Image 1 (spheres, rainbow, N blue to C red):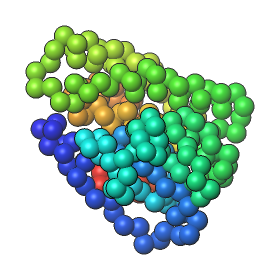
Image 2: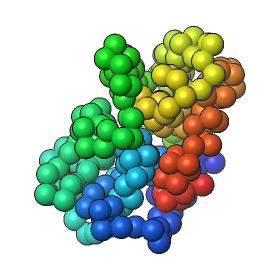
Image 3: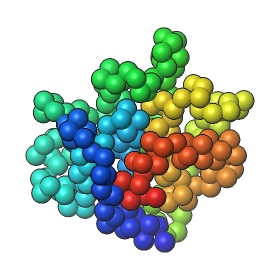
Length: 228
């Protein structure tokens, strides 16, 4: 079942966007559906930018435009964002900070200095304590092993912390506006299904995820990647 889920994602086609503008075409995003590049994709759409999407296939190392990703980006994984001047932007946290400078009207980070630092802390926590714990065997195993069972327990402990932080919050981490920190957390929460981690044990997380899925920028990005 998990393999069929991932196969559908990797073979899905992006949904064409008839409203793409010249400004939007100046950003090219190499992405993989449901990967962390989705957080960047949503942030772009929140900023009013519809990127030129180029899907990457990790099985072949090639992107839809025929290039081997490492020829453009030596690290060889997504997200890779290329702007109109040809500059290559990489790594979720770095890209989010860059987009905040380019598109301050998108409010990807709180305006308050203290909360901005907290948002960066949340991005770092998501990257190091959640993202990197979703190891490949979690998605493809047929029978749980000692390794995958232990890893799920580690992930659950980290989600305990996130759930506690959301107690009393009626919308998102920093009020009524989705920030970059929320978007990265959304992506790793979407991985819990195929990784066989039951998100329902954290009602706060389920409600938080559902609020984000109702956001127009989130829905637009996921539809474009064939996820909705």
